[in-house]
Length: 521
Image 1 (spheres, rainbow, N blue to C red):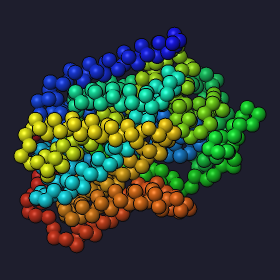
Image 2 (spheres, rainbow, N blue to C red; image 1 turned 90 degrees about the vertical axis):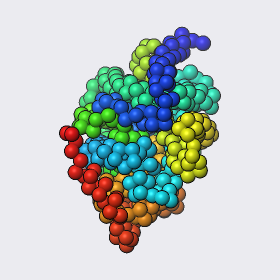
Image 3 (cartoon, rainbow, N blue to C red; image 1 turned 180 degrees about the vertical axis):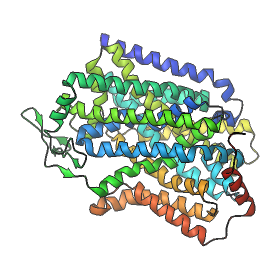
Image 4 (cartoon, one colour; image 1 turned 135 degrees about the horizontal axis):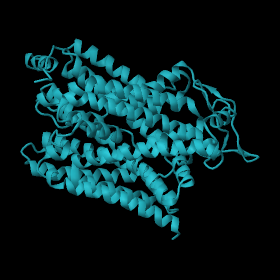
C-alpha cells in the first residue's frame, strides 16, 4: 500500500473514531427511553439544532451531486436548484419551526412526524399514522441508499478498491454509531459534521480558484462552452453509449438548450420539499427553547447559502481544470474527490474528503433513525402491540434500523446510480407527502382528518406516477415531480376538508392554544 493511501486511511480513521466516541458518549442517555433515543428529550441548543438540521438535510448530494450536476451541464440547473433550496430553508425556519416545536409538544408530546399528525387530528383509528409511517419507510430506504452510494464511491475512489465492499463498510459504520447513540449522538455528530462539510467546501473552492488562475479565468473558460455559464441555458455534452465524446483532448458539447421559465419554476420547487423533510422537522421539535429558533434560523440560512454557492462553483471550476477526466453523469459526481486529492497533500486531502463522509453519515444516520422510529414507535407500538413497554419499543427501534440498513445497502449495490437523481426522487416524495399537510396542520384550523389523508396519499402517489409515467412524455410534462404533486396535494386537502365535517371543538381549541402561545412565558 502506498504512502498516500496510508495517509488517507489515517485521516479517515481519526474522523471515524471521533464520531464513534460521540456515539458511545450518548449511549447511556439514549437507552433511558424512546423519547431520548428518538428525539433527544427535546434538549438541543440553537447552534446544534441549526447545524444538525442542515447537515442531515444536505447529504452526499451537496458535495457530490450538486458539483457533479454543475460539472456535467453547467450553471443553469445547479444554480436554480441552489436558489430554490436556500429560499425553502429560510421559509421553513421562519414559518414552520417555532409553531411545530410548540404544537408537537402540546399535541400529546409527539416525538415523531407520524405521531404529530395523528395527535393533531385526535385519531382513534391510526390511519394517518400508518400512511405517514409507510411513506417514511419507502422513501427513507431510497434516501439511505443514496448515502451508501456516496460513501462507497468515496472509499473505492481514494483507495482504488472495489465499490461494493467499500459501500458495505460505510454502511456498517453508520449503523454502528446510530444503533448505539440514537438521536443525541446523531445530532451532536451532525453539528461537528456540518462544520467539516462547510470547511471542506470553502477550502476546495478557494484552492480551485487559485489553481484555475483566478475567478476571471474560470468565467472565461466556462463561457467557451455553449450554455455552460448561463442562468437561462444548459450545456449539452455529446455522448456515445453514455460517455462524453472527446476530440483533440477536449470534451465535445452540442448546441445549448434553453432553461426557460417553466424549468426555472420547476427547479425552484426544490424549496417546497423542506416543508415535508422529517430529518429537518424533527430538529425543530427537539430544540429545548422555542425562542432560540431565531438564532438557529440565521445560522442555518448562512450555512446553506455559502455551502450551496461553493458546491455549484466547485463543479464549474472542476470542468475548467479537469475537462476530460469525468465523462459520464455518474463519474462527474466525483469531481470534489478529484480536486481534493489533486490540490492537497494526502493527509490534508483525507481530512477534506472527510467532508463527504460527514455529509453522508450526517444524513444516513437521520434517515435510518427516522425510518426505524416510523415502524417501532408508530406501527409496532401504535398499532401492532399497544401494550409494549418502552424498553421493547426501544429494542424494536434498533432491530428495525438494522433491517432498513440492509434494504438500503441492497438498493445501493448499483454503483452507477446518479446520486442527484436518487435524492431528487426521495426529496419530492417527502416534500409532496408531508409538506402540504404540515403547512395546513399548522396554519389552517379548518383542515380535517379526511383532508389530511387525501392530501398525503395524493402527494406521495403523484410523485411516483409523475416520475415513472408522466415525466417521460417530455415537453410541458418534463417538470420536477415535486411541483405537480405538491399542488395536487394542497388542492385535495382543501376540497376534501371543505366537503367534510369541521374538526371537533377539542381540535380547534388546541389549535387556538398553539396559535396564541406566549413564547416569553
